[in-house]
Image (cartoon, rainbow, N blue to C red; front, top):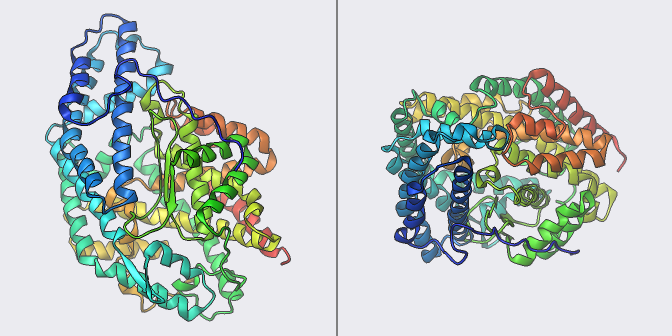
Length: 578
């Protein structure tokens, strides 16, 4: 597997004892009260106070992270669920109240204005935003929303379908849509989406409840709707709602036609009169699905070698995580759906969770999560925990860029150049697919939360209008409207983390721009990429993108330029001899 990096020393504590564990509120309360009561009589005292508060934040954050990890790796673990519920219901509300008090203490301190604006600028801007948004009546509502939203993961983790006499998670079954037998793919497609429909009423009711509570949170904070509140809560200071609308339009006008082009190629390559939804994942070569690895150990071993080919540090981070038991990659019943990289601000080495089913997509997912993991590792030296809590626009840039940077080294997973070519084509097709889907999900949420009194029927109509306007005309969905009407139910973000999705589109554009630069100057591009990731959230988003050597831009002209690069690369692969 190659040499692993030396496991970093956990954050050295100066305020919270090194053996302290977050258990009961009574024990935790002592440290928050100490910060509230401490006098701040100089700039030096204020800086020490900020660092101590940051340390406490790291302690609490890591404790909460492990509680979440434990309920996702095994949704049947009652003890883990109890610990998580206690953290959300008993600890979080009290912490939120204290955080508001501490924020006010910082804002009111006469020495705050004397802090270095370069060092503390982003931190202070975010604190002021939290002060402006805080309303005590939202504490119990936020707790209710957090607990309610987690029901979505439980519902999907319990969804299985029967295939060849055994039950499969939907994640594993999804890989079967790559099989060459068209009738088999169609049957699997109907089983997957039919199973999702079985929980339609449950998921619709869940969203209804979340919508009401989120709208009330916005009203309590003085906003007309949850969208406007959430933009402020997410700290979107570097772009506006108008920029998001520009993104929607640019993707529809410049990327969707490229996807149409590819789907015409797909239909011709598969010799089909009609391209149906179950034809969108099978390889256009009509060959069996690629199998880049046989088991999880091989996936990790090859991934470490692939990442190391881009930069030795990248592979060493994942190798170390494997040695520390910080990788849980295999799909199994009772495990929550999806995947994530969980930063651990005390330990300095994150945890990666995913649901592998021995497909090319699993390889791509681990490359993606490796980008997040490397990002987490590179920010471990930042003194403020808040600087390590990177906004999604930057976090996803790290992850999506890693997918593309490693693509030239995917030969480590495949025995032939032809298989490597097929994998690269699949990757670039996925880039074309994800951008319209991101625009669809984001635009739909704009409607959802600016029309909070809508009925379920109105919601269905709005979804279908949005969905169809960003769907390829080359795909025949006739007779499948009953699936399409609720296909948004499969998108975890809408339920659990509203408005956290357009970042994937922004980051995908940024990743393409970095990959374009990588083709011209690999070494310089990787160094710029690393330099950008090391900044964490200590600089504005636009400055981080500029450090990476790219633009934070959603204009139609820029999207057209990047789209042309994708098309050129894809056309080159498609015209290569098998």
